[in-house]
Length: 358
Image (cartoon, rainbow, N blue to C red; front, side, top):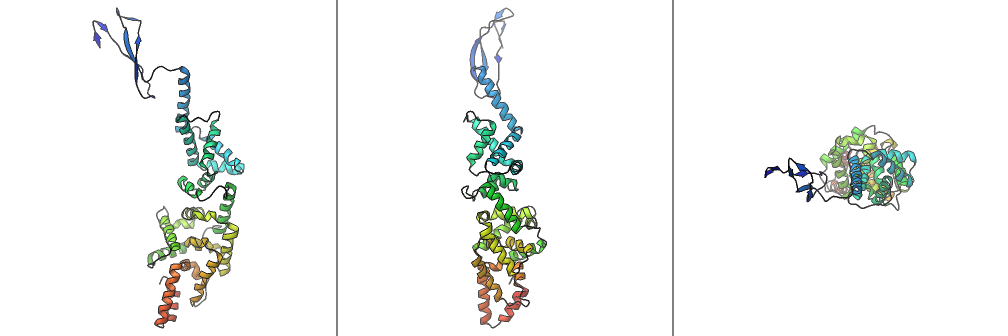
């Protein structure tokens, strides 16, 4: 703008990283074409502050910028590995887990960033120590990182970890349990998974009776599988089948391998189920793993009441493990009573042997 033959100029300094503007007068003592500029205003975003604060702020800003571009992730992974080592995990396993749990590491880095952004200082702590501090604050004792390294999402890992109290489930004991469960239930790929999937689809298509809680949980498990890429075909793959099973039935990780799983699996084997096919029964009807041995023995007595021509009850259990459920056994009892009343019991047994979905 112009005035009285003199050029009047406004000097402006804009700081893009701060927020509220602040204007204050500055007397400029130099002469412009015969006129003096006296009281002009220079616009700043805030009042002048000490250079030391600007330096500190620049450092924090650069650090946040490095987090956004991924720098510092390696240091965070090393910190997580160190933390897992403090929990009793071997160096090799801790390095592996920290490298395979990127979302967990990112969550911790964001936790440190939030502390610094809100000026909640951890005086005297290095970046590594801050990461370890945040990890300890989470309270899961490294289980979330381990579960993510197995292929679970971060949200699923956090949900499953809630079922594993730290006072009874240390990270090394959880790692050992997972290894044992995989060896017992998924020690080899299912050779006849197509038959398992076919039986599941037939059951879902023809089931028309009122169902009990165990059968309801089983159907929910199948529906979740169908909603995923690959559908029921996921059951053909060891690691994917294990993850899907634990996501739907996380309380399985609370059970003892030696005192609970092993007796049930031995009983199924003695009943005539080949070891490599036991996983078919488990995946088709997971709730049986929560039963005690006496209940399983009682449920299997019903199979002996069916007059099969070849007496191959193990084959029947493999094809229709849902016969163990309360609702189907009650329905079978009603069918028996009806067949007695009209004197067609032999017809019922023949029909069941050829068309079990009845």
